[in-house]
Image (cartoon, rainbow, N blue to C red):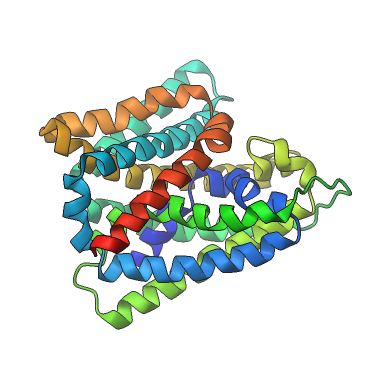
Length: 313
């Protein structure tokens, strides 16, 4: 359950569509595979840290106004990107169906927030195994595609982007992960960290391999969906993966945002409403601009939050 919780918080819309993989890894060419391995090693130790020790830092972070603002800003950006990703998927439906689907997503988010971490764990336990299998099938189909276009840039920036990627994907989800780690033995935390990282690295490697051989997709909002758009069946599968990935990450980020907002608002119901509806309105900026421009900024802020976790653990 914890493995799928961790996987669900990392595999969001940016990951499942391929856009995040492009920004943080693929554009650095052949070196991207090395950077993914480095990211996996960092992820292992940080996830284990969150499962075993990070709960001690939560109170200090929640009581720090500056760090709380960092967490609120980052959480809103990530929630907004998940909402934007979901809306992008629903744009092909007519307005009535689109409105019903969005209203349903908002309602489910509010319900799961009321359930807390246990609700998130159960949701991920059901959705993530299905999404992982389908995602693997989509990537295997994409392996058959190849182009001669080369668009990689200097790999040196990848040295900075790798730790930023890890910080971005763990600093906020770490609040959820640390709560899930309560009561686990050391052996359980090691195994949960190991299996979580192996799954993430596997999909990063496969996704990166596909993108390296189809670099014309670097500019696409949703590279994997663009790659399979001519195959309606595979497109539906990819659609499901992105939708599930957006949703599982969305509820984790909404939970993190709600916790931070509660320190300011002091009202549980209002905190839940703000945590869902404000990011929803921010999502109108669009999926690609949020991932391309706001994610790198959030990753820098996430690094500060992560350092604070380590200092006060």
